[in-house]
Length: 452
Image (cartoon, rainbow, N blue to C red; front, side, top):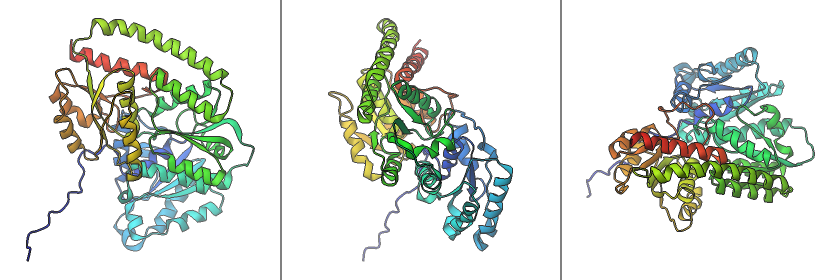
C-alpha cells in the first residue's frame, strides 16, 4: 500500500495586486450621491480602503467612503442567530442620516456563509420606494473585480430596469464601461481623457463614475444610449451582454486601452465607424490632436538623441490585464522598447485568457509576447528576478510590491497599479493623446534620476 502523503497544494497568495470583493464598496462610492451599506464582519471595509484608496496613490474619498461607510459590523451573535435584524437597523439608519440617490447593500462572507436572507430585508425598502439594491459579494467567490461586476449588474437589474423612463435611442449617446474606480490607480484622469476624446469626436457620454458623472441621472439614461462601449480586455463584457439582452443595445468591445497617437486615432475611428455618425468632426479632432502630439514628441526626440545612454530598452509589466495590455502595446509599438516579461495579476477568468494571449502574440508588427497569469506577488517577483534584461537599465511597470526587485535589478520602476505607495495621484492619466506624453515624461524623468 502506498503510504506516501499527498502534498497539499498551497492556496495562499502573497502580495496580491487586488482587494477582496468588498472593495466594490468603492465602485458605489465612485457614483455621485450613492451610499454603500456593508453587511459583513468588522474590519473588512477598512482593509479595502487601505488597499483600494489610501495605499493606491493616496486617492482619498469623497462622499460616502473611507471611514464614513455605514455597515452592520456583524459579529458572533449575528453568525449564530442571524443578522437580518441588524441589517434592517443599518439600512434604516443609513436612509435617515445619509441623503443618497441610491443605496447599495454589499453582503460579505459571514452573512453569506450562514445563509441570511438579505434580499427579503432589502425588498421591504424597495417596496417603500427607497432606491436600494442588494449585491451579494462574499470574498470567497472572488476579488474586487468580481465584486465590481456584480454591483454594476445588480444596479442595472434592480434599479435601472425598474425606474428608467423609456425614450428613443440617441444615435450619438454612448454608455462608457471602462476602468474600475479606485482599483485602477489613474481611473479619474483616465476617464476624463477618454470622455474628452469621445465628446470631441461627436459623442455624448453616459459617465457612470467620477467627477464628471451626473450620478443616478446617467445610470437611468443607460437604456436610451445607442450602444455600449467596453474598453477593457474583459471587465464590463458581462454588463454589455446583460444590456444587449434587456434593452436590445449592441456593444463595441475594444480590449486595449488606447495610449499614444496611433492607438488613440485607431480607437476614435473604430468607435465612429461602429456608431455610424458623421466623420467630419472626429477627423478634424484627430488632426488637431496629432499635430500637437508630434509637436511635443519632436522636442522630446531632441533630448532622446542627445541623452540616450542609460535609457531602458527592455521592459516588464506586472499589472492587471487592462493596464498590462495598454502599456505593453504602447511601449512596444510606439516607443520601440522590447517586452521581456509580461505578468497579469488580476485572476483573469479562464474564458478570457486565450483571447488575451492572442493579443499579446500580435502586440505589434514582428513582436510576439508570451504573457503569464500570476496572482501571487512573490512568484511574480521571482519571475522578474530571473529575467535577463540585457546590459541596459531595465524598465519595470508595476506596483510597490515590485520595488525591492527593481532595486536589486537596478531598474527604473513606474508604479501604476494596486498597490502604489510611492505616488500621489489626483487626476493624472497615462491614456489617450495627453496621457501618453505624461507617461513618456514619467519614464524618462525617472531614467535621468537613476542615471545622472
